[in-house]
Image 1 (cartoon, rainbow, N blue to C red):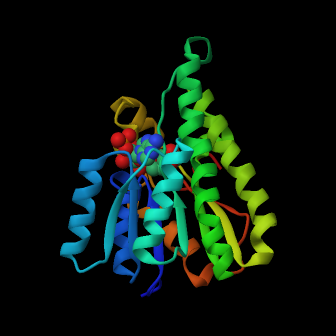
Image 2 (cartoon, rainbow, N blue to C red):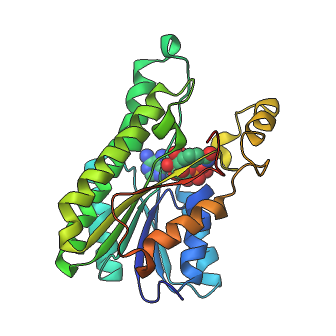
Length: 246
Ligand code: NAP
């Protein structure tokens, strides 16, 4: 029970990595606030957690909308009374090579993946500062650390997340808040379902394990950064990519 009585907010918690993290955190004793755009999947996930005896609730919000996020944060704190851990996990892709990249797709990816992290952190940070302790985990990507063909918008957002993570680590570390990022490689979720099978096979060969990552691989990294075991880890980017290309 590494997170006994902790309240965790997971954005994008209805599906993919966020949903697996919600179950893992629940198993480790946490109460879970699932924040997502997808109401149906979010409610189903909360119900699934309840059935396993985990305290959980779903809050619908678009993380790119600051007003929406502020209202959601008030409701989360009303329901759980506090927030100990924020996982800024919600993200989208709108891929295209630079010359074909529509400016609206550029902006939407920045709005969700980068401004969304800013909005949620601004909304929940005051509660953590009042407690004098908190953990913030931001989801970057290997596209943010190394760039990726066809992902100008996504790479920019994910690199920006690393900048914000390191800045906030310095701003709030002395106030008891740890801020870290996780940079996953290619992980088996809906997000990569548009990648052709042939390319996925090539990607697998880029790790010594000859496989893609699983949502569990990333959720376990979140768990470490959310637990007291990482109290002296601040401003780091934990790569969960099976050692790709290194
Ligand atoms: P996923 O399976 O697509 O799940 C993402 C969840 O976030 C979905 O439920 C989605 O809802 C929700 N979401 C999207 N936009 C939102 C918004 N504006 N407000 C609130 N919720 C929103 O993705 P995933 O693969 O689990 O990815 C989780 C995180 O890991 C993302 O930040 C992603 O960039 C990052 N990551 C993933 C990989 C990978 O290979 N899968 C690699 C590196 C990094 P809708 O379905 O309704 O949009």
